Length: 122
Image 1 (cartoon, rainbow, N blue to C red):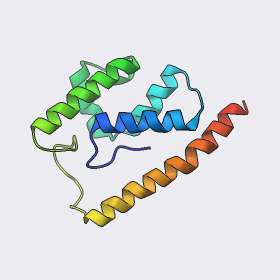
Image 2: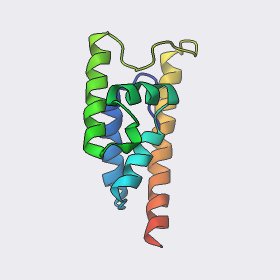
Image 3: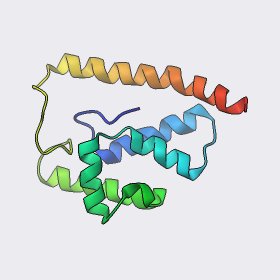
Image 4: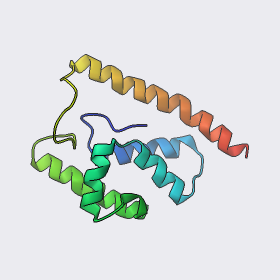
């Protein structure tokens, strides 16, 4: 699961939690945090590192949620949904963006059950 171009970090975390609960598998807090952060682009991670005062990977999950919430509030105040300051890709047609969202949803629905079966076999 990856952060969409127009998706706030707060929404991303909520969707991540819903998909995690739906998968009915258990991960230790460190692994859960790692999976969550792996879906975020590098430029946004650098911004989050600055906001958190260091390496965001070192924060507990609850503190990461607070940083996400603060980042989303700041983005809404500035009138932009995504966290990127400069868009490196050309604007896309809304139907192409919707197709990308559908593709991510399909990947999540297919991959999480496979991952949960793999984890339960160990």
